[in-house]
Amino acid sequence: MSKGLIKRSENYSQWYNELVVKADLAENSAVRGCMVIKPYGYAIWEKMQAQLDKMFKDTGHMNAYFPLFIPKSFFNKEASHVDGFAKECAVVTHYRLRTTENNEIEVDPNAKLEEELIVRPTSETIIWNTYKNWIQSYRDLPILVNQWANVVRWEMRTRLFLRTAEFLWQEGHTAHATKEEAIEETKQMINVYAEFAENWMAMPVKIGTKTDSERFAGAVDTYTIEALMQDGKALQSGTSHFLGQNFAKAFDVKFLTKENKEEYVWASSWGVSTRLMGALIMSHSDDLGLVLPPKLAPFQVVFVPIFKNDDQLNAISERIDPIIKALKSRGITVQFDKRDSQRPGFKFAEYELKGYPVRVAVGPRDLESGQYEVARRDTLEKSFVAESEIVEYIENLLGEMQTAIFNKAKIRREETTSKVDTYDEFKKILEEKPGFILAHWDGTAETEERIKNETKATIRCIPIDSEKEEGKCMVTGKPSKRRVIFAKAY
RNA sequence: CGGGGUAUAGCGUAGUUCGGUUAGCGCGCCUGGUUUGGGACCAGGAGGUCGCAGGUUCAAAUCCUGCUACCCCGACCA
Image (cartoon, rainbow, N blue to C red; front, side):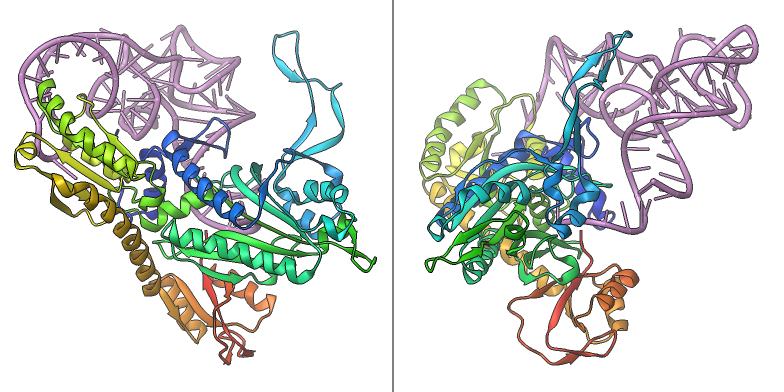
């Protein structure tokens, strides 16, 4: 393992790239734009998955699985949906290879597919094509289904976790008898995401709706959770879409009401992806490496023994093993690093880089005093804790750290959130103190576009909790009823 | 897809301008020893089609042509 990361203040984006690789989370693969998620990184993703999956099931959803491939014709059926995804689709045209005279492999031109298959960029079309067969009556509704899957969007420029050509995600697709119920579902799920982001990722988010131009292709309304990274750029971290009857109409999905009337089905879809990994990394980590909230850390505690020989290590193990057992019985994940190939200093640096929340160092000295050095990753503080109290202490500390990490991120966000009333001020803040900027906007796509072109900042969302406030658009001076959140975004 | 750049061992690089021994160095890796409370040290060792294909030449990492991949800046995007 090579030494040190570049500092965030020197080059934030290089810091991120180095951190992802050096902390063993992921690396670039032989396939352009596609990443290999390494075991340590995948372990974090699995923790996220487990919790989200639980939350989905607690709100009445079940998992299912739909095909990776979608017939090309399905995309034609919802006009704005095609427009949104057409430019980034991978297409399967053949189903067989053959060997040439030179012993090379080539696509067999005789094995052309009648209809090309699209590698799913999202599954609305194949799912709604399927739902058509599942739904006849109001008694068949609602359908509350989620799928864990990989999708492909052929992006021009990619970055590990933040934007990869293939990524892992979950996509919920629900069908309802009424508009109200579908909207209720859409809102419920954005709240689930917000709760997950804040309580598990320790990442404060703003819930809001997207403007027309930022809305999901095919949606009537898109709800989003927006997080603010340490460099002042926003990251869209999860979306929940009210799809109206758009997909039901496109795929002709109708049902009979209690009154025997034929109606189109109402829909929602919602998703979060491995992008959350990027959000997690950029929310908390520092110049020494990853900082993980205890609830998502693959290992919450690591014991580093300090020893000169096997006898010492055995003596340490004898004392440590019962402590580890006690921690595990409380549901705390623990690692005991007995490697003699690395010295303690190396291990300290390594666990800091990888973001283990709590580190306990135990050497001969400590066995005698009956106190162990406990170091917490977020503040780097160390304290000596008596052997008899250490289990309790660590359990409390993990809880405390989860809160502390969230609070720190929240304070940072508040400090980099500005209210501005003039366009000049807006531009100045973008230069000097980037972050969320609350400003008035006249509600038109033209003004939004102009601001984007001139400053690269976009409207991240119209916050759902914003109070009404009469004002004037900072650009055109036209009336506005509330402030919206602007930021430069990933 | 437009503009710029780079390609030498697992990683980072020197050498390329101006062709000339066996392509050098750091990290990492292997072996042995000494070490071990914040990224150890010494000794020895392994590892290279110099991105690919062709050309010029007595001689090519170095010059020429073509190709490919990657990086940065734009446009696009969860």
